[in-house]
Image (cartoon, rainbow, N blue to C red; front, side, top):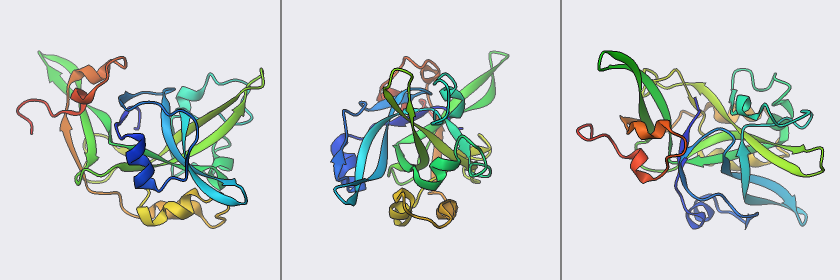
Length: 231
């Protein structure tokens, strides 16, 4: 975790929910089957006109460190373990001043099952019980390509799964509580930023969904509908 998630909220919904000052650039459309290296939506704060402004920005999922020679390793850095994120060279600078929020409906995990006598993996969708957005803790980074163009990428911070969902997978995204958004996003916040993530995750629910989510080309709201007979 987290290797696939859904984000179906409209730009208007996200602007209101996060109290956005500016939408910076065209955003990717809602996507029910976001996979590594896909474009995603992030909430960041950057100084503009002498003050911090909260921005809704497009980034690519899979962090590319600023010092990387190329972007080919991005798919390996879609997650950052909270236990070691402050120590890893790829994430240290981002932890200090480039933290973001990554909105999601929820995320997918796969659980081993036996189907027709053969081993298989059943996808489950994991989402907040109250239907609110799952606000994942993220980090972002800027990388300058050899041709001079800039790429902005992000990673999801993960932790040990709660009892609600730990039997499906032992890892889950870290959530940022609403009361900690300001400090988490503030690039000048110089205390231990990771301590802001100690608030317990929201109550989660889970249910099996269609195997169609296994194919990254598939998209649409049907992917997060519970399998018949499991509601």
